[in-house]
Image (cartoon, rainbow, N blue to C red; front, top):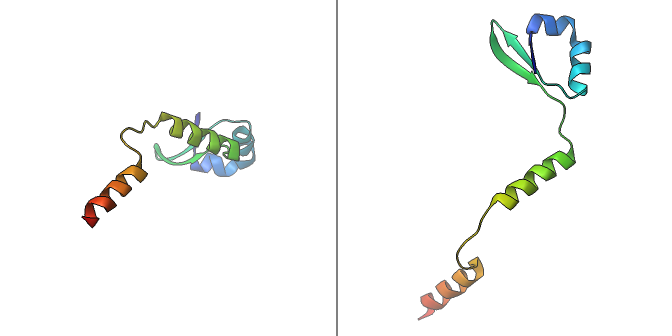
Length: 78
């Protein structure tokens, strides 16, 4: 990851875009404060992999929701 001033980025945009296309992240700074970040675009496969990892990290406990709904409906009837 490299940091580049906004002025320098304006002068060397083509070179920065080539860096980003190669997979590098570039932070644009103005007065030593980050103002933007250039990153390579995410592919559909990357997004799906992230979602799969998230779903696998979830742990569901307790009875199934369908059983809860059926039980609640039966309790309301009587």
